Image (tube, rainbow, N blue to C red; front, side, top):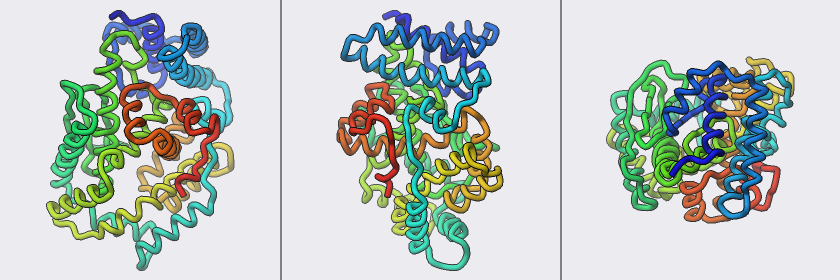
Length: 410
């Protein structure tokens, strides 16, 4: 079935914007000929990209007559608003940070109160008594559950097998899907993935990860997270040739907020807490680790709350008077993130577009968690795998048409 006009123009628009923004197009499974055409063109001026986004949105909404066409228009409204905003920013327009977040991610928010951070910090401190700062005690605990480098890929592969088997049992796997692991050095990220039916996972062994981190990453990135979602949609939606928007994954958009939020819940979607502990115990035994897994699992809730420190830091950095050093120190001391993550996020906060990227994890996780509570896990996962969702749909269904608050994390 031939791709329709909306789908083809959307792909061309995304690819042309991607010429200005490296890594904006995170995954592409559309016609190679379209990519070749765009790569051979001169750069499209930002104002033309903005105008095309508006024209395409008008066309999508004119063709919305209920049902699937209306859902499609809702998805495109969020995506094209973000694309148009990026074009405005590329053209030099100044937009306040909170407005940028709403326009790019399709979701308003409020930062978590300082009292929430205080409570989470106290809970972690009680779990990890001893000398030294809390950051030092967390590092000591993590070291007790971090496998040696020569065990990392083996454990990640074992986790992947378990999660793949469970995902196949729950939802089925599309034909031909698979994952390939590659060792790399010097990556800013722990993992870097190219999501298609055959996902390429690049893993930097120099970045230490606990067993819990590794299991979370395997679920988030592969089964039932990003890889399963992309491979399923490539099979069910993009393969019919009609929906061009399903053939591309774009960063810093409402699409990404939902996908990152769902991926943050991926492990809990496929395993109970008892099953998670059992899996980690087996991995600890294989690697000869003797860290306290009970403490490790009890720390997950407080750590999720402290994940909202990135939102507070982004706001203060962009709308307050925080220097890069103050921002980094806050992310380290309150968010308890590593030095490399603190440096990378602080650098991103100075980028008018990429500044919103670190916010997708806590905001997306809170939004999707509350949505799953309302619609139910089975229904939520079915739609996550079948539909292109945006925050406005989820917010409407949980009864909050605009604002997202982090209260559910407390």
